[in-house]
Length: 258
Image: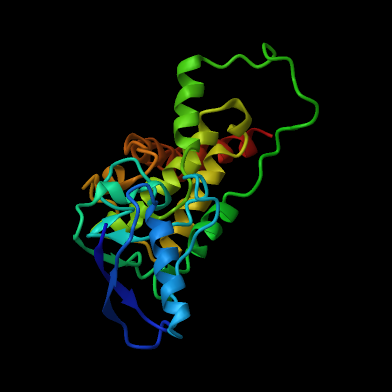
C-alpha cells in the first residue's frame, strides 16, 4: 500500500508550524498506524531528517498516549479505537492522510504531534485520596454492591485519559474525562466519604486549567475510544450542585448541633 501523509511539523510551542507532505510505500495492510509512522521515521532518520515526534507507550489501547487527529478525527475514522489499534487496512490504497496534534489551549504543544496533557494529572490530583481502609482483601459479600452499579462504575473507570474528548469538543471541554474520573468512585461505597468534596475540587481544578464549558454537543462521546457515555457528565453536574449548595448547609447544620 502507498500513502501520502500530510503531517503537522513544529519544532516547539514558540516556533511556526506547518503541514509537510511525506510519501510512503510498501506499507502492509496489517500495520498499525503507529507502526506506519515508525516506518516513516526510519526512512527520515536514514536520510538525515528529523523524525516525527509523537507519543506512544503500551500500543494496546490502554495507556491513552497515542494522541493524533487523523483526517480531522481524534484517533482516526474507526469508532471506539485508539490510534495504536487503527490499522492501515482501514484506509484506501493511495489515500492522502492528514495527521495533526490535539488542538486545545489547555494542551499546549510540545513538538510536532506531542502535546502536554499534564492538566489531566492536576485534575486527578485535586481529587485527593480515599480514606476508606484498603488493607487485606475483604470477603466478597462483606460490601454488597448491585451488579448494575458496579458495571456502571467500571464503564466510567475505562477512561484512559487520552484527551480525545477535549480534541473533539468545539469548546475544548474536559467534562467527559472529569466526570468519568469522578463517577467511578462516586458510584462505589469506598468513594462516599469524600464524594462531594472530591467533585467540587476536581471541577474547580478543571476550570482553573482553562478547559471550555460543555454544551452537550456529544462530540466527546463519539470520539472516545472507550465509548464512555455523556450521562456521566449529568451525574457529575448533579453531584457538583449538591456539593456547592446542599452539603455546605448540611455541614453547617451538623456544626450548629454540636
